[in-house]
Structure formats: C-alpha cells, structure tokens
Length: 431
Ligand code: ASP
Image (cartoon, rainbow, N blue to C red; front, side, top):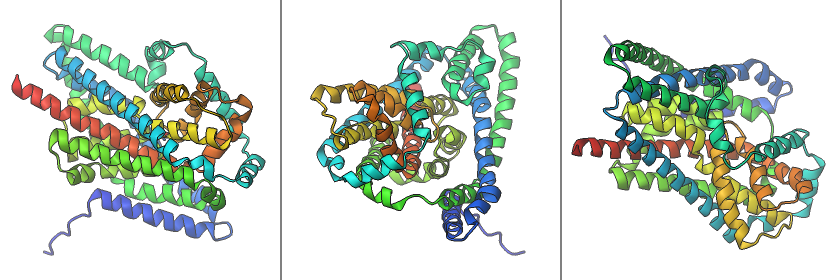
C-alpha cells in the first residue's frame, strides 16, 4: 500500500488560500464583469465562513468559560488570573498608545500630505462618513461609568443574541460559574457534566469550521482584491500607513520578546502556533470572528490551559486591541498635522487616556477602530466641521491597515494568554 502523504500544516494551507484568492480577485478586477461575478458567486462562501465563526463564538464563550471557572480549585485562582489578565492588557495597550505618539511625533507623516490629496478626498467623500461621525459622537456621549453600567446585561437572552454584547455574556457567565461553585455538589455535578459534554461538541464544531478555512480565505481574499481600491490615494497617504505599519511591526516583536522572556517559549514556536489565527484575522478583519480559531490554536498547538484560554481570549477579543489604540494615537496626531490643528503637550496625555478607553470600547469588528477615532479627536478639541474630512482621510487607506491591525490585536491576546498560562502553571506548582 502506498504511504499516506503527510498533510500540509494548516497555516501553509491558509497561506496558499490567501495567495490563490488574491490572484483570482486581481484577475477578476481586470476582466469586464469579473468583480460582479466574484461578488455574486465567490464572496458568499467567505460570508458563510465568517457567519459560522461568529455563531459559534457566543456558545463557545459561555460553555468553555463556565467549564474553565468551574474546574478551578478555588476562587482565589480566578481573581489572580483576572488581575493578571487585565494588568497585561492595560500595560500593552498603554504601551501601544505611547509608542504611537512617539512615532507620529518623530516621523511627522502629516507633513507629506499635499493639498491636492486633501482636495481629492473632499470631492469623493462617501456618504457613509457622516453616519460614522454620528455613531462615534453618540458613543462619546455616555458618562464616565457608562462602560461599567453597560457590562451588566438587563436581559441575558438579548445579550446572547447580539455579538456586540460579549462583555455582558462574559459578566453573566462568570457570575453563573461562581454561583455554580457555591451550590452543593448534587446540584453542581449534573450541570458540570452537561457543560463538559457540550464543550466537547462545540470544540468539534470549531475543528470542522477550521478545516474549511483554507477554502474560505480564497473567497474572502478574492472578494477583497476584486474591489479595486484607489492606488493613487493609498500612495498619497503612504506616510501615515507606513508609520502605522512600522508601529505594528514593533508590537509583534514586543509580543515575541515578552513570550520568550517570561515563559522561555521559543519565538518560532509561538509564531508557528498562532499563525492560523493570524491568517484568519488577516482575511476576516475581525478579532471576534477569529476568536474560535485563536482559542483552538492556543489550546491545541501551544498547549495553554483551557481555563486560561477560555477566560483570557474572549475578554481580550473585546477589550484588548493594541493595534487599534496604536492607530488611534497615530491617526489623531496625523490628521491634526494635516488639517493644521495645534496640539499642546497635555493634549497628548488626553490622547493616552482616550485612545486606551476607545480601544477597550471598540468592537472586534471590521473598521470598528475608525468609529472610535471620533471620540479621541473630539477629546482634543478637534473642530467638528472638519471631522468628516479627517475620517475620510483615514478611511481611504483603512482596509489593508484594518487587516493588519486585526492580526496584531489577535496576537496581543494570544501573547497575554501564554503569559497568564505560564504564570498560573508556576503558581499551581508552587502550591
Ligand atoms: N478590526 C479590528 C479587530 O477586529 C478592530 C479595528 O481596529 O478596527 O480587531
């Protein structure tokens, strides 16, 4: 019998899918009727994949987080893990904002944008811009404690049915699981058994969805490349894009160094382990849609404990977006440079605070960061009549940058999961 050929590793399969999809999309964009064909017949396959990933996310969070918490030996471990997670998330986010401010003030990308580019942008401003400004302004209107109020669901079934309410689902699940630990054994055990069994089934579903990911990314990338983007505008704003990409590359290096120095895990092991999630993030532009893949990579490929993964990743996909906060800092100063809005040094401090909060509030969805940019711009007194032009400028080059941001956001969550995983292992060994 001929020997069975070894299967290509998943990340290579997805990578090939990305290139094949880009090739199909690019070719279609040069043929009359090609883009319409891709939109009608190819793109739906990618859309179905994103829907599959999204529908599994909420049940997966509920079941695996309940399992994770109810498997813990005591509640002290939960609070220790929670504090470490939030601590790392805050640290990396604030670092990203500071890095962004440093880079944008040093390179001054705004100085490279010509008056012609501004005129082109103003002339071709899409109607959706004013809608984005409006959503951003509405989000900014809440009081200082509004964020905490919104974490508590008023109707859990409503939260479970909305992908944007992940923090509410997490709040309910933690509360539910803690109370599960507090009730007598005979009430605990049937619930735990059901949760364990559901967990196995859901993980199987994730495996099946991941198996089709190489084909799905062909569709997603084909659709992306078939929509021709204005190369002229991208070139005109390349200074901004370049600074942001440079910042994101630094963040990726920082994550690898953190993992290496705190856990001893070789950088290549980390990179290889998390790569399928990074590639899915690149193709979907959504950390929320990528969440099931991120969790699978961490548990199966990097062997991080289920308790840690099921807590750290869902929380991270909602509140930890380092590349989004980096973008907020760079984009804010950049548009102020281009549109001549003076920023005092204390404005830069305000940016540290608001960009951090805005990235926490941003949903893990395509272009979510852009909407939150309105909040940061308003906090430094940016004139509201210039907001549409500012957003048009950032949005013109946002599609490829959003893809890269999502890769960095997902890698940041994975990095913290590995760090927290290693520290809880050490703690339980020393007990
Ligand atoms: N698309 C990003 C994410 O899902 C959010 C953003 O920066 O727009 O992580």
